Length: 469
Image 1 (cartoon, rainbow, N blue to C red):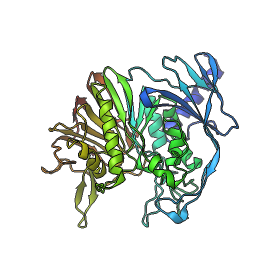
Image 2 (cartoon, rainbow, N blue to C red):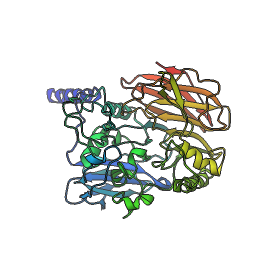
Image 3 (cartoon, one colour):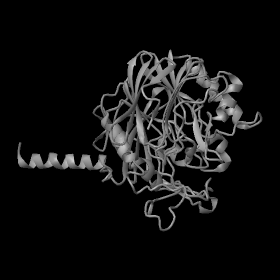
Image 4 (cartoon, rainbow, N blue to C red):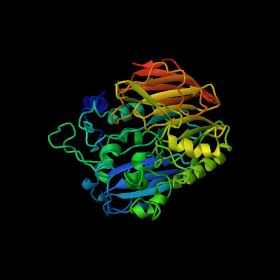
């Protein structure tokens, strides 16, 4: 091997190790992000975000084709933020969002010489991440994450490790955007961070740190509460939502939020009789919904459409941000651990249609929202619940009990049989197909070590470790 070749390989190895260690951001074109979103009816859409004046061409199986403008570069008029209305500012999107459908059966696709990851008819290796942004939120207390510290905000490392696992598909269970307010003066950990809802923040929170994983496989993008219209919905609908971007369904004007905050469920086929069903739950509330709340009708409609989709496959996994059958914990006034249950808003709306909460064909749920990893399986006829909300955002710190109290239930009628959790650690989850209705789950940390393993069989699951410490 020649000396130049040796030096080139050595440089490449050093760059890869530095990126994994969080010492250097992944090399990236300053004005280009490209990725593939899997959406309605399993359709695949190539997306390119560029600072150029025109969309690039896409090369599909040796032929060049134009990409269409999804959203032009422009600035959206100011809307007040949820956390600090006085700190609001317009959302600047000085990037052109472009897209092109990737026909089924495509063998090769690329943009500007960069190969695009293509969907597989039967994805057997799935990465599940969620709650990946860096939290900067003015709440009257200390709610700021050290975005400049790779140990405190490790999403770039998690994305690189997950990409190295060579997934066939990536599922993001929601909450991509967290930098809502400016870093306080004098705080070095987040000094200089962009904030607000424009492109600079979306790039810092998701596209730059997530680039390795965006390049590794197609993505299924669920929507979280941080992407509701009152928060980061403008960026989500421009960049990540699989559907066409329509006027009035863009979160630009608050008057249209009754449209922009809701989306119909869709299915993504996984082969061998399995599918994902993706539901938009961005506007639900843990406080619950009154019978006259308009959201009751919206989510009841989502339930019925989910039910119709579930009838088309033998095995469905529901992908939605708010865990309907999970637990979380807070400290009580005396410092004791107090459990809170699954999302009450979804329980109210879905339960009004079906007291069992979910259709029989839904055997597993993949969620985020609670900043931890968790597994729950039931003796009752409820689907097993997994929570993968531990991939970058400041973690929950109140530990879930190693053994749940005897009467603990996340929803009426749900009888817990198996329970496992990891609180306070960052990482990602993988699922590897083991049979027609079987998946092997692994829980990974930021060192690339497996911290727990689980087996899903039908609607049940069991894990090797009850609580990761």
